[in-house]
Image 1 (tube, rainbow, N blue to C red):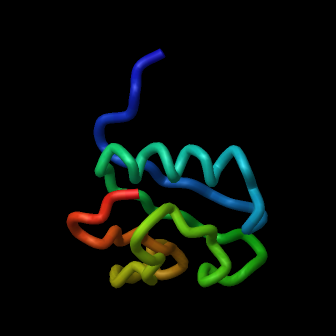
Image 2: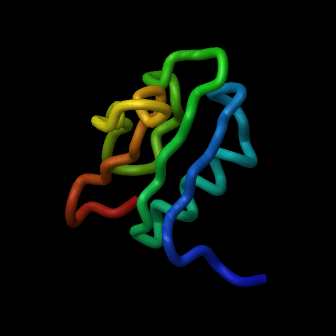
Length: 77
């Protein structure tokens, strides 16, 4: 199986969605951009992916509902 090389866009139906959270953690660990859409809950409930935080996307349109993981530089996961 080939690994992602561009980034990840995830749609989580629950903050405890284990498979999606794992995909997000693995992408973040590789230093790839991670953007997620919360479906039926607030994005502040996303699980942490390591040292960093989820922040709302600044773009308009459909991206206004998305959140992006921002890692703390130098701390990794």
